[in-house]
Length: 253
Image 1 (cartoon, one colour):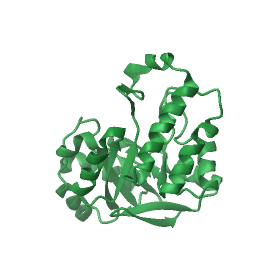
Image 2: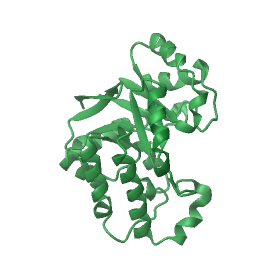
Image 3: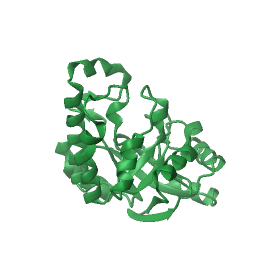
């Protein structure tokens, strides 16, 4: 079963939330053979959403299931806000992601010079520490791009698997799902999120997976989802996680 649970119809506020703008994402999803497409806009743009558009899309395209999610930037001091976000809509799922360490948007190409200010092992420990806080907040269903900190190719001297170990244990304890996010193949690191060794560790620990393109353009919807499924199968997965109103439903891979 092919799904794409991480699609940004608004991009980074580069489009309006209209049927005309959203329809190409669904059309591309159908062309890619998706059974489900999940729109998960950045929480910063939540006021721009017109939820009625999703109902119209579902009626217009009955051959693909439209899921409604939200990608939430995690800030440790804003847990009250996350409770409020959960109540705004009957979400199918919520993605928890870490894009910032303090005031540093570490995945933005304009700020890569700050990597040189860090001991890279310490940076990875800091990142996974914040990610673990997100997981333990019990506010979210999916872990977004698990090892995003590698985006520009800065690799730790220590074992990446060892550095991520406590975070993987927290994911298992929280009962969350990890997305296989294909966008990593198109970033400077040129590697899927999570890395194959981390994905194998997820499988060994019984952590479910789903698939995501992280598309910010319609033409990227469903990109390399088949490749991601092949990777998951090679690791040992035989099921993919889907969601309905924050309830996980496992489907055959």
